[in-house]
Image 1 (tube, rainbow, N blue to C red):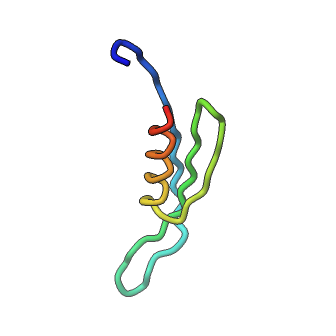
Image 2: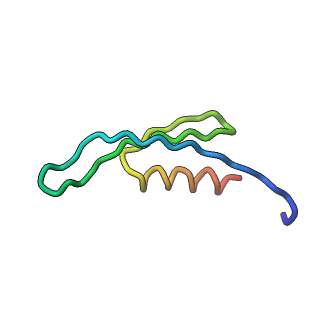
Length: 60
């Protein structure tokens, strides 16, 4: 609906878990907290975390 305003907030926490010796590629653990629902989820990649956020925003 036009005119309705809704806010959905997320807190993302990135923890470095590993760095490849040869390439220097970094591996991250990403914790996503959905503020309104107070739900937390852990992911092994940024892409997985973004897919989760997209799912929640799609439900709004």
